Image (cartoon, rainbow, N blue to C red; front, side):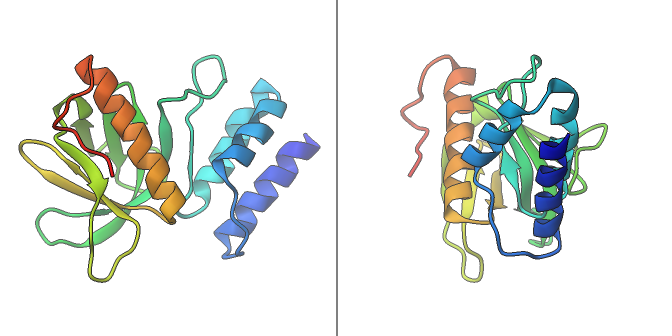
Length: 174
């Protein structure tokens, strides 16, 4: 339990604005050492930290390689405002929730089998923005860092490929 407490304390310190950054590799290492009972507690503490992403836990408590969840900024379609959303990529879908933590049901679900492009997007006043384009809509997300943006794009790309059954040449990742 001492490891979980230290892990939660570090997540809370990040939430309060400390500059230390926890990489997904460190998260995987620490989670693999925690008992199954306290993995959920540690993961919830991480998700309270702003702009943090981590690979999702599978049903057996192990990390699922083609899943990711965390907080991203998302641009709204109508008013073009940016707001914080908890997002999750799993089983060929990108789901996003109203708040910065998971709730009972998502406010939006993007079927990734329909994705045309997943790539970085230039923005005048925002950094680390990437797009997920479908035939009917362009979704813009902002990650906290270049590495986090690359991680999200890679997981979305893998879910697009696995959803379609084969890699679509029209789907680009840069």
